[in-house]
Length: 113
Image 1 (spheres, rainbow, N blue to C red):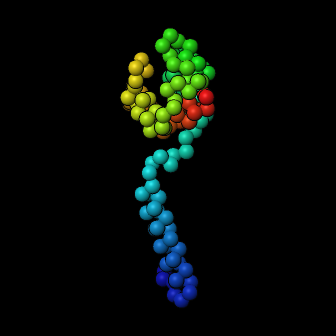
Image 2 (image 1 turned 180 degrees about the vertical axis):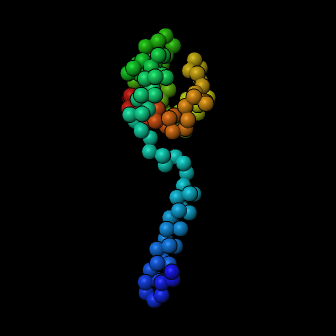
Image 3 (image 1 turned 90 degrees about the vertical axis):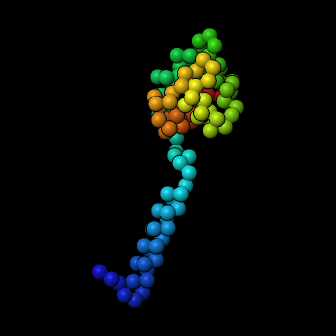
């Protein structure tokens, strides 16, 4: 059903605005995902606490003390790559954690120091 007159113009403007919003949203970087600190905490406890301890204090020999910021004074992108690919004694979580889960863990790690 076509609208005519003023109502038709408003309907077309609203349609264009919606299409523009979708286009803009689709071009945004994926880093706009809002990381979930609570999910990150759960993943950290399951996957990372064996070496880094529940509070990130490096309880196991060789586990760095995350509560002092050791290893965390890098960008989120660098930290993401470390978790994904592994570094030193820390294993790779590629194929174990998806991108959102790694971002959740990073959000949790940022609360430790």
